[in-house]
Image (cartoon, rainbow, N blue to C red; front, side):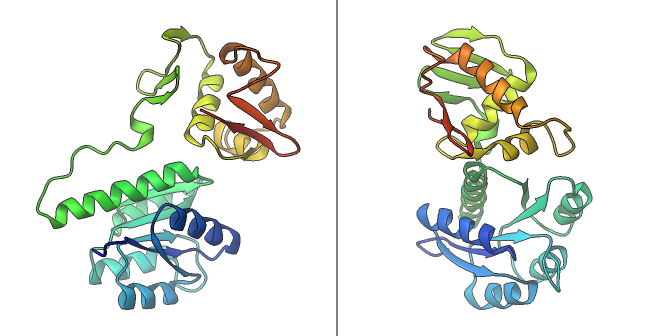
Length: 238
């Protein structure tokens, strides 16, 4: 494995490809990009990346076919990107040899955690070691100053005291916290917390944000944790 891990991004949507490349480079990775399956195979064979981010929906040769071909030739970790509703794609992707998957739209922190976990596991296997249980953020407590989110128990503590949250309040808080520091639009929040088929509107998000502030902010009218980004949505600062 190279000193600086090399990641190949295979994604045909230009803005997402650019966003992924920017965040991975900022996280210390060398990045290669491809917009279709044939180019992905060419780069994988010639550049020997340490990990491949592979979108399922690609022009020409789709991600499933690319994954199947790569698995016959190399053991590079493959993290598949799939649309949230495409359960069959997720299952088939894992059956043809993908190591993990993440559903769109995804939080960048979650994706980077998955990348680190896969690279760590590959490194340990190459050294003849058994990887320890993964500690991806979604499987452990989130500690954000005096705010603690116990994911296994679905419990929130503030200053050591339990905070009673409704189910959607908890899910909203967890989504914001996992993506702390990132501006999240109301539409994206609706998609991730209320599901794609939710028939409500963005005012639902605003109401739940207000409820969370009343329970988590010292001064709800002057929030320090859940900040409004005017005209866009919200950003969590922890």
